[in-house]
Image (cartoon, rainbow, N blue to C red; front, side):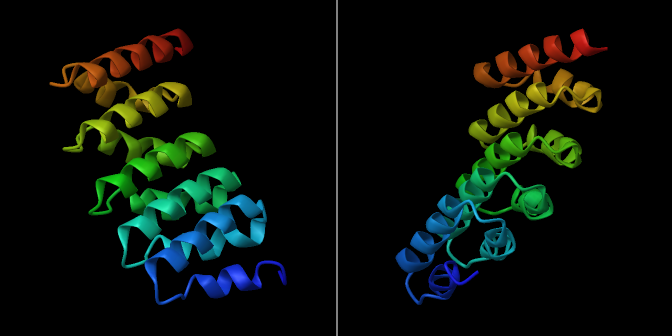
Length: 157
């Protein structure tokens, strides 16, 4: 923990850059002790710090981050939501399946696309109904990702 101390102190920096840099370094540290402070950073007032926290948590590959990342799917900033989708995709924790199906209705195309791709990789049949609806999405990329995900899921049935 002593190696993390300066980084943990950086999480309370008065500057956005200081907090964002500390979050990034915690993600690169590979230290499991960084997970919970990074989950707390998901609540930072600045979206760039929250976004960096999603990326860092994805790198740490620790499922203790899943509840915080699921909560970040409702963030007001689309970059934070996109980061949470990507991080949850790396963690492959099935607790995220139902929350990710909700992302298929997000107003941001990137989030719908990412959610469809992640749900296809999860291979969880609970996503079939939501992916079927997403196969009619107005954005071609989402339609393609949802169709591909459905093909993968039907192979598992």
